[in-house]
Image (tube, rainbow, N blue to C red; front, side, top):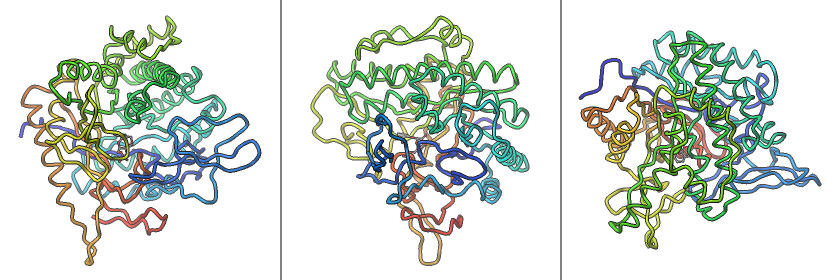
Length: 471
Ligand code: P53
């Protein structure tokens, strides 16, 4: 094996999916707290109360509140993120288990609304600051390096409701304040940071959820993304000023796209798809400027952006130190009619006859990981980390209380072999954190039964469970 000495092996989580304690110690709600549980067939719903006081639940990722309405928790629904796996009260036990597995790194995120309950306050919530400090101190006991995501899909709900979320330029300032607090507060405890989780999802999910053709959605998505790029760049700059030791990365949802046929039109479409959904974000965050093809992408959906001179300067000055990404699957791209569509919890395109698929329709493709690593490293030549990779599956507890997941062992073995090959071919890969080193609430479906963990957690979709941890 070619993995360098000091390679950062470990696991990854996100605050809103594992902490629970959603309204404890002054934390404010996030969108996930008004999002119900779902399944591979049934999308999660967002709940709200309209101006006449009637409750509603809508399954629309791009949903926007009608006039006079407000997001609300309704009696008839379950909200799995409220409890998560109660990492908030179990972190000592969980970190001890991570240490037992030999973790060198633990990826986690800081819940924005735990530090700033509404998001627009001037000063942070001391209880929130204290919680993360305790977690970092606990990790330090075992020499586990924290890798901290600043934003993992959890903008404070108040900012969504009162400012329109990332449609509003002011979010840059609020995010900047939040990020600055994190860098200042945890200086010396945290060295590895990620500014935005899967930043490319903002645009890519419109494609993957088949919203094609709706230009107003793309207009909004590209504009939100621009504000996020600027926020990210400013955070990188501040992070470096506060501690030059900080290593700050971008984080891209890494799907390896292939053309479905050898029709040149498919080959070209595939290239354009890489630009639109993968390279666009990496290029801005690693090169500090918009790529030449950006104009083509904007034109495709008649997008006109609010970009200032200062924004462009910020992008230039906030180039990331490393490229990190999640990797779960590859996907096919074609101009032809798709006969065999993969069915899963989002449209993953045409079925690839050479690959196997998970119960959620995600392609098992370790070679795609090698392809991605080599392709992207060649473009940026900066250190890379795979910060999410794993297999969501139905894990069963046997009568004797043991849990066996040979399918997951195969999954990891083959993905680790793929990374090994990429390193041999020159990729500067510095770390690997498996997704869901411990079971946690699925982001896509809100399920607990879509399990990822080395550690099983006794928590179920009907809300029951003791939260007991099992190896
Ligand atoms: P779940 C879509 C496609 C690939 C990764 O996903 C994605 C998504 C968004 O659902 O998200 C990342 O829990 C994300 C994590 C998430 C993980 O993949 O739907 O960064 O928060 O839990 C796995 O199985």
